[in-house]
Every structure is written in C-alpha cells, then in structure tokens.
Amino acid sequence: MNLDRTVCALATPPGTGGIAVVRVSGPQAYEMVAKVFTPRAAGKTVAGARGYTAMLGHFSLRGQELDETIALFFRAPHSYTGEDVIELSVHGGSVMAESLLEALCLAGCAPAGPGEFTRRAVVNGRMSLTQAEAVMEIIAAGGRQGAALAKTALDGALARTIREIQTGLQSLSAHLTAWIDYPEEDVPELQPAELTAALTEARTRLDRLIDGYGAGAVLRRGVDCVLLGRPNVGKSTLLNLLAGFDRAIVTPVAGTTRDVVEQAVQLGEIRLNLFDTAGVREVGEDGDAIEAEGIRRSWRKLEEAGLVLAVFEAGTPLTEEDRAIAARCQGRPALAVLNKQDLQPDPAALAAQEAALRPCFARVLPLTARDPASLPVLSAAVAELLGTARVDTGAAALCSARQLAAATAARVALAAAIDSQAQGLGPDAAGVCLADAQRALAELTGEDATEATLDEVFSTFCVGK
Ligand code: GDP
Image (cartoon, rainbow, N blue to C red; front, top):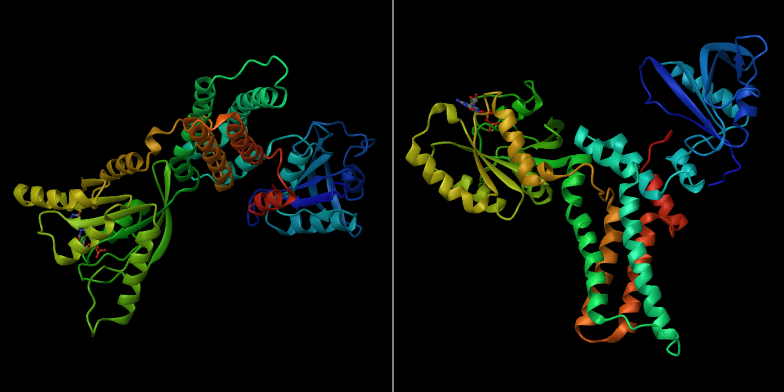
C-alpha cells in the first residue's frame, strides 16, 4: 500500500438511497477536492477549511456543475485514517456518486482498494489490527448482541486483555533470561511452582477466549442451519414461521420441497442461514433422481451445519426415516422439533418418541410450527444450545478465525511450557516455549503482522471502509 497516494471510494452501499458519501483520504486530499468541489459562500475555500467543519457547495465533472454537495472536513491526524480526509455527500442512487468519483480520479485521486481506509488507520497507528477486524465485524453483524460484541473489540477490550497476558509473559521471560544468561549475577531463581502458576494463569485466560469464540462467531456472523425431516412433518411450515411469511409452498402432498433453498432469517439475536431441504426419505432403485440429489445435499449440509433442526410429527410412532435422521444427528448441534403439538398427541406415544429421540439430540423441543407463539420458545432453545445466551458482550472476545488461530498457537506453546516444568526439564525449555507463545500473541495483535497478514485481513473488507 502506497501512503503517498490520495485515494477515494464510495463509503455508502451502492443502489438507491437518500444520500451517497464519497470518502477521500491522503496527503493531497484538500488539493484534489478543491479541483472538484466549489463552495457556495463567497470567500470560502477548501484549502481554508478547518477540521471538523462542513461546507455546502457543488461538484463539477469536466467543467459541468453536477450536484449539490456537502463536504465534511477532517485534518490529519484527527480523522479515521489519521490522514487528511474529506467526505463528500451527494444525492443518492449511484449516478452522482459515480460522476463524483470520476471527477476525483481526473483530479489525481486513485480508487481505494478493499479496506484501504481502515488499513491506513492501522498503518498510521490510529487503531490496532484487532480493532480493524472489529470494524468489519460491526458491519457484518447480524444482530445487536453481535454488534455489541464487535463494538467491545473496537473499544480495545481484546487488545487490552492480550496486552495483559503479554506483559505477564514478558516479565517471566525476562526473569528466565536473566537467570540463565547471567548466572554470576545474583538473580533469584524463579521457583518452578511459581513459574507453572504464572504460565497456567495465562493459559486459562487464553482458554476463556478460545472457548467463547464459537458462540461469539454465531452472534456476529450467524449460523448455517439445516432443516431436516421426512415429508409432511411440517418443515415448510416451520420455515415460514421463521421467515415470517409464506415463502415455502406448504401443501399436504408429500415431497413438494425438492431443493435446498437458502435464506437468511433472524431468530432473536441469531441469524440463521437456512437450508430448506428436500423431504428426506429412502430412495430405491426407481427413485426420483432429483429428489435423490436433494437428499444427498441435505446429508452433506447436516455434516457442515452449525445448527440442525430436525422435525418429527408428535404422537406418530417414529418411522425408519425418522430413525435414520435421528441417527445422523448424533453428536451434531441438533435440536429435535416434535411438531404439531396442537393436535394433542397421545401422552404415552409422545413420551415414547421423546425417549427414543433424546439420546441423539442436544434437546427435544415440543412445538407447534403453525403457532407464531412458538417462535420465542424456539429462539430461547437455540440460544441455549449454541451458547449465545451466556455470552457477555462486554467482555473481550476473539473476533476472527485469524485471531483464533494465533490464540490457539499461543495456548499450545504455553501448554508445552507447563508440560516441560511438570517433566522437570528446567528453565531453558520453558523459555523456548514462552518465546513461541509471545510470537503468536504478537501476531494476534498485529504488532508483528507481515504485509501478507495485512493483505489477508483487508482482502475481506468492503471497498470504502
Ligand atoms: P413438510 O413437507 O415437512 O415441509 O411439511 P409442511 O410444512 O408442508 O406441512 C405438512 C402438513 O402439515 C401441512 O398440511 C401443514 O399445514 C401441516 N402442519 C404443519 N405444521 C403443523 C402444526 O404445527 N400443526 C398442525 N396441526 N398442522 C401442521
């Protein structure tokens, strides 16, 4: 990334809307915007604009006045990127914004790459890499809890927690080094018990972060959810309940839902990326080929999904197909929905069904998919199953797979250090492992991040952020 360039990009989503905002950042931002933007008030100039002020005017393309424009000025280093920044608001839709971008490029601006504004903020020391990742998570969050979690990371909670762990490890490491390298000095020996206790505390803190990752990721990004059941148990009805309208065709004829349909719906705080499935059933020699393909896809999805909702008909003895579905749900994050409770199934039959399903599922939930009052019940059961009900959105959390990998590497190194002490291997062995843990943590916070790491992080960003 070349910081000498001045870059511009659309900061608002493309498409129809009230206003569109184009952001310009870099050393020549004021000079270039001055060629494009004309203030309305006589005597006002772009060059003379102070930071944190706004100015009304218009922009022109190839000498032709195009649209009323409001310019918002920021002066380095007091801006998002830490550079001179100007945000130009024009009328929404894409025509004016595209014309403005063209005018800016003609004035010498370069189009910004994905995440370039945030990357500049990191390079200019305005935020840490973990905070930059949090920015992306706020944008992508599916619910308020997920956004709150990302906001906590943006406020620096994760960076602070990692810094505390690093400080602890640094002082251990300094002590070990002094003791090993300067035996003639009177450095007091670090007692093995003391060393193990300090290492264990750091490992426990990493454990907490690593354990919370799954539920946090569900809150921020949603979960892939597969809906399974033999024909006519009420899958489409459940899908409609979740989606809030009649999206899937509900019919009393078996097997109308042929394909795996993807749709995102919000269930409480969790976004479900839904895969409606073909009615799962055994297909014989002369079976319908399309249906068979649908079933194969359903099974594959079941293996990958973060949440499985398997639907059964309450009061009807479990069929072979029901049992085959239940067996595949074993060990998966799966919820059995015993549907059609409004038909008041025989209690003895219901109890037998529940007993048969329980060993295969995390939870068996009696439900009436037809009844909207079932929604909060399902929502609470899913939040409980995925652990999101217990997430403290104010606590530090890892918010990317990259961070998780680095934290896990640090944890493995600390576990090895603890192990070396248990085996009586002496301080040198612990010192080597400790150095590995420190390297992994530095990678996590981004202080040692390579260009390749930065490229990887920012490649997932949208242009304009
Ligand atoms: P799918 O084949 O599994 O998608 O099942 P559908 O959603 O198409 O439902 C099959 C039939 O069961 C339809 O006639 C639905 O109206 C009915 N049904 C679904 N859910 C319920 C429920 O909670 N109570 C009752 N009484 N009928 C239901």
